Image (tube, rainbow, N blue to C red; front, side):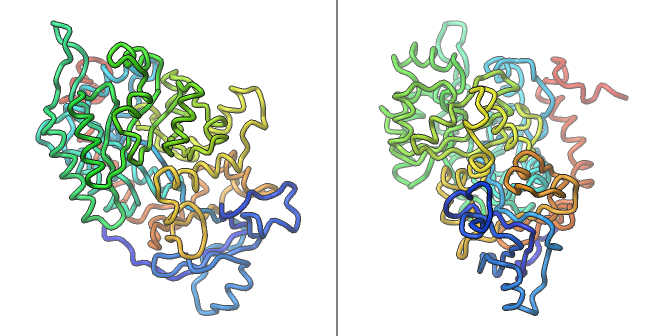
Length: 480
């Protein structure tokens, strides 16, 4: 399929949640229109840009010939920003949910990474792009993790995102060492030169893409040789690249880092100069007060992944403390093999519920906080807040309309309803850069049924080639 043209249109709703300016006061009353909410509002899109946001009556009167989308009953909001996932896991859902992170990485992700190639990356990305778009995501930050030598598999992600018309940032989450060999030395799984070559090839591929940017990927600091870490810092400083990595995800990481370097991973990242470039770090769970101060001082963006953290039993990211120090915190689904879904709305709701339960306090985080993390907070964490994350004139036209379902039929509080009640069923229309990629609850850039059929044999082949079928982790290919 080819991408639809950018269109000029008015998008209307009972409420437009702009995510601009200060949070709305509760109860809303007459102040709602000046505090991030517009009642009976509309958004004017033209040439991929937001031209105006305001009362629907005023905008329709000013532009009587423009097409109007929406019947005025729904909710219009900025496209959601998924700040952390692994599309390398797109064809690997439903495995290892009872494993800890280190066990899961060794038994699932390592063999999976050996069997990935550009075709599986491309088709898996297109498959999950449908799920992302239908849960309101317009921008996704991906780390593609693989060790398939010579495959340049990460470049397939760009192909898949472009086919779907989805905005993205892509990184190659390489690790050149993995575990210990029989002598107790670190086992080399890739050569530094191989990793650098694919990082550069991916950066070149992203330069040719309209909506896809590049970050240097560091799967984990512990999975990198000191030589590769030094190369990452040098390359990023020389080229102005940001980094996408994981930090402080599990307790074992801190123990192993202390054994290897005599300091925890955040301290080590600071010492080697990694924090001198823009960093987006997934998880950030096992943090001390000084480490939170370090993240704030170096303006490290954090991707909070509540669903994956709960599935793997990793712990709870101290989101209220991070946001209280001014750290930009976004929300991520994490990969499809640690979440088993790319439903961003599910991750948004989980983020709210997890912290209320963790602190036994319903006020520790509210619906506005969580929606801010999923929009402007995620955009700020990625350094894209000048382009996306809120509905403001001059920003790119990444817009979502929720309408037509019981999920958004009752709007006493539109922000709370989006966070706690909306589901992919509610997502009627999605525009990315002014192109309507979801129309009438259906993705129009990737045919869902055709993509599912295309991916079935790829899934069976991946289960076979990775050994995950033989090890019993996958039942694909068992049925006759």
